[in-house]
Image 1 (cartoon, rainbow, N blue to C red):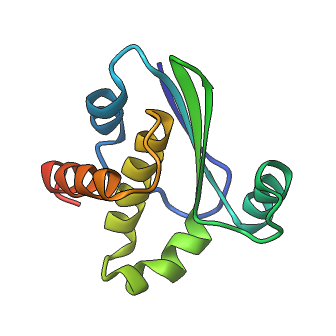
Image 2: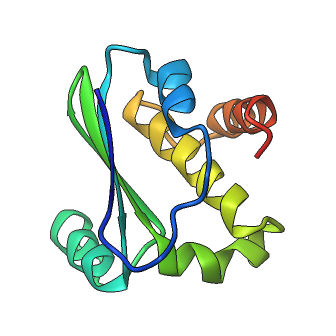
Length: 124
């Protein structure tokens, strides 16, 4: 199962989210992808990470076979140029990043190499 929800007024980019999810996490992995704004992002970040500011992505593993990813559309639009990406590709990159966290990857050179391979595969 894969659900996408938009809790903002922004437009969600046309990306192969389901194919990406299936490739990284597997077809049987249940995932909710929620697009949020700064207010919700800041509230979640403060509650779960004790950081009182909005962030671009949060991922939560619910159990071995399910999780949630929250992407902040406002933040991605602002941050994309700093990463030399357009907003669509930056959102795709963040989605891949969140999926890898759900699969127990931590920030490392191994995770970065995997991100590059996946971004190339999905043309983001």
